[in-house]
Image (cartoon, rainbow, N blue to C red; front, side, top):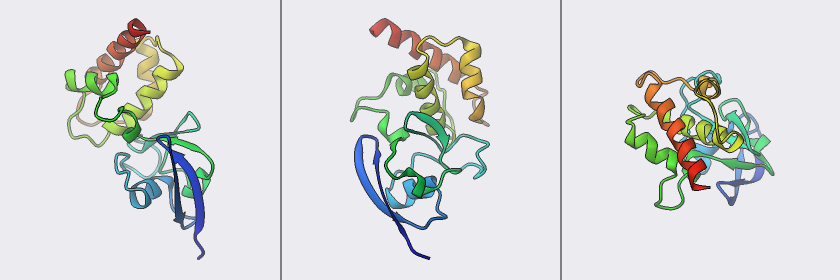
Length: 159
């Protein structure tokens, strides 16, 4: 089977890779670009561990083909921090101990950042609804929700 050439932007950098037309975006990110933050939790789009944004839209990278990324803007968990400076969401997750095993954390961070970009003042209910596609088997969600809500308040105060 022939490989397809894909040229895309990931976390602000133009990248190119060759992929089989059946490879998922998740596999291309991890295996071709060495961006291993997004995890494969289920492979069926049910857990959110592989969440990334594509052209500003939150997607499960396990459900998108790598060839579909051609010409798109992709953001992964690796692009959230500014160099060595953590994004406020990352800092609040640490402060609230909103992570344990770490499998779900990258997807939840990407989803939470996407939420705050679209709605800088979400209610708790809106936050829980937005993050409902991200499953966590360790934290029980309350610490995650508190971290996101505090980040939203902090970002509003800073602007």
